[in-house]
Picture (spheres, rainbow, N blue to C red):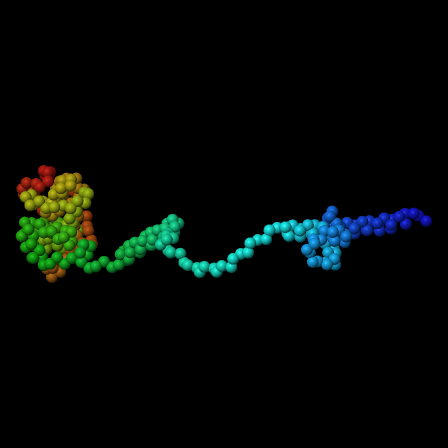
Length: 284
């Protein structure tokens, strides 16, 4: 009979026993092992009340841990105090944090910006009121306008329309038709010229000069006759003028329609300076 047939099963059985014993040792606390019943009785404190049956299967490590807990001083008893009621903090005492301040400032600035933008849009879309500069102004009867021009020594200013009104000689109508656009001719044919107050050079308001009976700009010395035709200075053309209409002898000036003045060299009336100039000297 082959001896290996007997040895192999024996080795297998012994290996199983060894593995079983090792697993039992790990479960019982590693290298410490289980205490015998006699050892447990010797380590048992005199004041303990446990029975021998209760100590069966208790490891030495567990016993040492229990003894350490018994030696630890007892924690003082906590006092049973009532919980204080919640009191909301004072908002003034807390104040506003820097982050909250900046956030609120940004929101306020955005609100103001949007409000201004909205107001500008509404103002742009809102219909313009009737009357005033940019609209059609009913000046009045032509005879009354000419009388006022004469009473003011050749010049009548209308602040509402930002314009000068002067007399235009009927003898120069034919020359005017060859130079001026048809939109300004109705008033000229009735004997009145409606001129925009700004100088074509740089936009200064041009005053009248009673002594020379011309318009003379104090900014850079540009000069114009009563019809607004350039007589001297750096202006690139004559004074700009408004479209006009005359209905039943009533003069209406459209201040929303500004037409460029006549070119340099235009002189339909032939008027020269009638006296000393208010600004510099005239060049002809």
